[in-house]
Image (tube, rainbow, N blue to C red; front, side, top):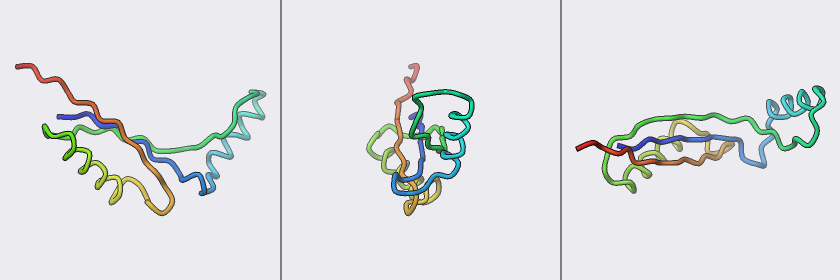
Length: 86
């Protein structure tokens, strides 16, 4: 069993209107030194299996087919093997 966290964000070349709105709000509130605000999506899931390479392949397929729009978004994921008590 693996715990998986997926982060999906717009590609750098794609305009992020939500990120820009939040950036402007930060500036209006008087916070200095904050830039490059981007908004994204986060997913957490458990994936059964013992072979990390097979789990990574499955997660990439899920991201490509469902969680991210490959034309506009990019993703990365972290996989942690869950310790089993025996």
